[in-house]
Length: 270
Image (tube, rainbow, N blue to C red; front, side, top):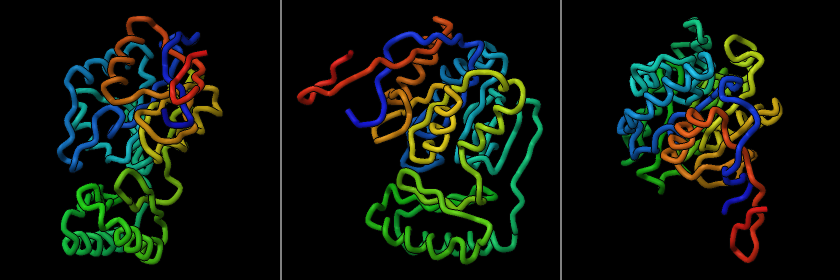
């Protein structure tokens, strides 16, 4: 078992209706696909999210590196509060939209250079997210070093108000100061999230800021999959998270951790 989180197997003493749920998308609600546009979403998951949204009085938000429009496409007909592009885009529960200001001229030139780079490195994929962009090297891991060097040279030299965000086989250029932890803080200051106990599930290093904020707010942080983390709990896959969400709709309360100690390679519950 990887370090930094425990497996879920016991009841928590906070009712679902008193929780604010924040969920990552790729690798959390849906399995990571070879290419971003090949992701598949289980229709049953969307139904579960709609039920969860109702059960917590609307305090459900998607926190993703994807654009809001993309999230809406994959989760339709669900319409939830959403922080897209790590919080560079915001849709609050009342439908109000906000977007970080950017220099379109500088961004367009940086995107062009990134597209040209991807075209010269077979298997590297360029993803345009309107106010941000990414280079994916999942299908070309041999170019990881070149992608890192290129993006490090590009940002902030050509995009002074941008910073790099590293994820699973991807490096993204995004507006400075936008991260999932700050996104949760913003949501928690607004109804219907304010005053509730935050619950966050995510799978990547981009989710660690969110785990830290949720932990500081005495909420429940859930890591999906392997890897070291500051999250309190762990579920092994998006399918396991879907089952967990379904079960808490029935039980009325999210599970909490049991303590687990590794003894001679085996996990033992305490």
